[in-house]
Image (cartoon, rainbow, N blue to C red; front, side, top):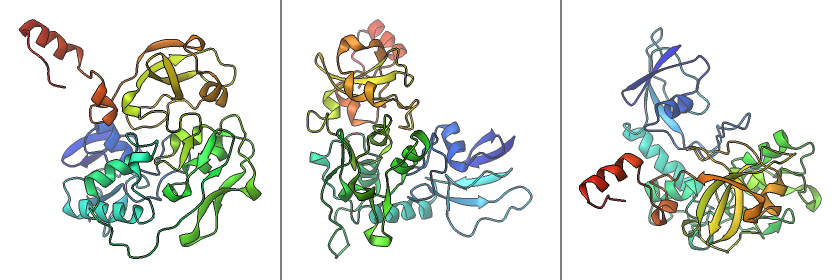
Length: 320
């Protein structure tokens, strides 16, 4: 086990653990990640939002690293000391990275289905500028239907490569990827082929922005007006463990269950995602956990049971 200290909080982790994984184990001051996805091999190192400052390399070599490093790609050394939110240099760099990500990404959150679940929206709120300094024309693409249930908005894409890694690792034949280079790079399908494999819908779940959207859910409701409920079914293709998003008695969409880092726990098939939208198709497991800091929590009770019991005893109203 190796000892690492992040923002003055120490933890012992196994060899091979990255700084980002160690920060997630601590659970506090976790660097943001737009491209890293623990379920996808080879992810990370592209968006640079998880940059941190290593002030002490290790016990054997205590020299600081000369530049900020990507925490999702840098493994821990014994005795390493890291600064994340306590470093002004890191926070300034994170503002710069956010500004770069927003050069071409439009802030069309009022009409985007990802609003309320978008980590770039959170980064923009925390680190973005009120006005862009970019003087040139943004990249513009036509919307494409890359499948009968998936629509691609390349204007919003930040080239995190998650969707291509899903296709590489979950499906036998990938028909889409990154075309061209540099400023004109784009996600597209080979000679306009449709993505029709049975796990293609997982590209929607892993997309950190609103570039890949579910055509069966588009513009039906905002996520903060829905009620997420965990459910399962006996599916021969996947685990069958999903989250149902209710509005009243109607199931508006079905997604994979996500953990506290907004990563899918088990990838689901397209049959569960698109074809099973009746309550009778599922066995409900109970309400999904909602992050108190998420906009989705605004229309839901998010009290912890001990808090409820305390205020019931004192006959007072708990704060939401």
